[in-house]
Image 1: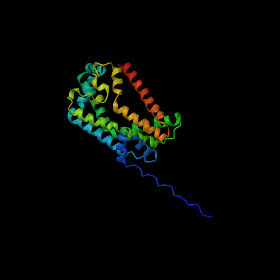
Image 2: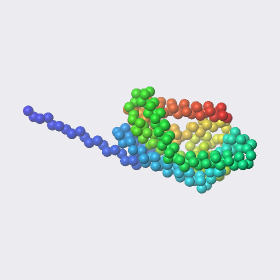
Image 3: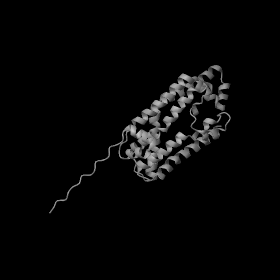
Image 4: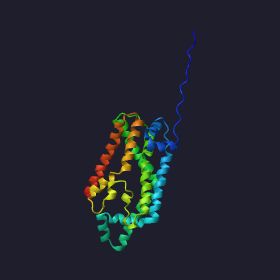
Amino acid sequence: MTEPIAFAPPPAAPGLTQWQRVSNTFTAPSATFNDIARGNKSWWLPFVLMVACAYLLFAVITVHVGWNQVAENTMHMNAKAEAKLAQAPPEQRDKIVTMTQYSMEGSFAATPVLVLLIGVIVSAVLWGTINFAFGGKASFPAVFSVWMFASLPGVIKSILGSLVSWFTVPDSFNLANFAPTNLGAFLSPTETNAAIYKLATALDFTTIWSMALLSIGLATVAGLKRNSGYITVFGWWVLITLIGVGWAAVAG
């Protein structure tokens, strides 16, 4: 009898490089997320790019606008904060502006920590939702990696914001809308209803782009149809946006 011929399985396709996954996130996102689903979960490059671009914006604001000016602008653009500032004694007024300045400046300086912290929290929520609500099989590291790559459109916002901030008159700079990527950037924060302004700011094309990428990637690593990813991601976004708009309406 002739012995059966054993055929070796074809070798697995090599994983994409970090640069390939970054570029594919913008041009062919399925390739990036399929690569993550195959087990290639490294996320250091998008993290480095996001932090580097955030620090570029930080440097432009520091050099051209100044953080004391940013703090004053922010308070003047909030009716309640401006009224509180106007009623405070001169010494107290300086302390309020200084504390506001340090909190904003410190938040930007802590970008690496905040990116990781927010990534962990968001990934944990999405991981739990896609697995327990939709029966997915995603691992937390895979979801975290997807979140990192899906956040890359934020790099475009940081670069655009750096360019716009450099040519903006310092006393009109608005940190809440440093780049014209949402409807709120074209509205006056002092003359527009607070709830409407909050909603307009939430309608940011880089945010929506990131959520679309996140939906695709989440469904891919969970082994589900894309509808499950879209429902999970945009469902949470709608809920959080409505809470923010409601709070703005109450706080006025």
